[in-house]
Image (cartoon, rainbow, N blue to C red; front, side, top):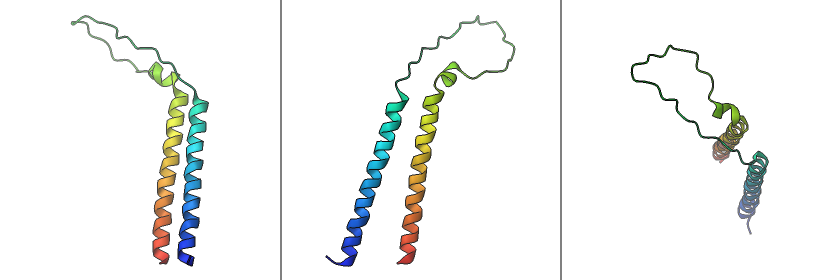
Length: 98
C-alpha cells in the first residue's frame, strides 16, 4: 500500500472510533435520564361573556416537571453542533493544506 492509502485507513479507523464513542455517550445519557411520566393537562371551561383580567403567566407545570429532559436535549444538541462545526473546520483546513 502506498502512503496515501494507509493514511486514509488510519483516519477512517479514527472516525469509526469517534462515532462509536459518540453513540456510547448518547446511550449513557439516555439510560441515565430514565422515563418521565407526564400527567394530562385539562382545560378549565369559562362562560362566553366572562372577561378575564390579564395576569402574569407562570411557567407551565410540564416545563417545571421535565427540566432534566430539557437539559438533556440542550446538551445533545450542543454536542451535535460541536461535531458539525468541528467537521467543517477540519474539512476546510485539510483542503487548504492541499
